[in-house]
Image (cartoon, rainbow, N blue to C red; front, side, top):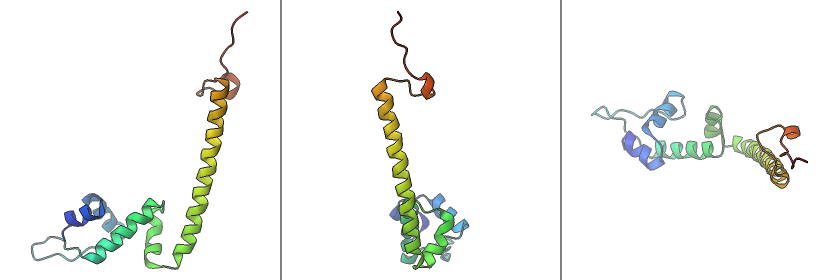
Length: 122
């Protein structure tokens, strides 16, 4: 299959394919007699793995080790879970602050000491 077909099947752009070639994540296929790249199912399988791992938050720099070493997956999942848990804690904390701001009718873009709306003048 050609670059455009592979990209369409995987849901990426041709530019993304070329980027993955440049950084060594995806092997360059042989050229056919018409000078087009000819990809096979191995390329598609690897590309789909790359996409899945990046969707999980794995940096591109970490992918070669993971793609080539199945043992590395357990450590990766532990790290991803820790990062997700930390993100959830940050979001819960942010929601708590938002709830307090709403409850007290304060202006959210001012520092806490100055954000209270002024009361009626007497």
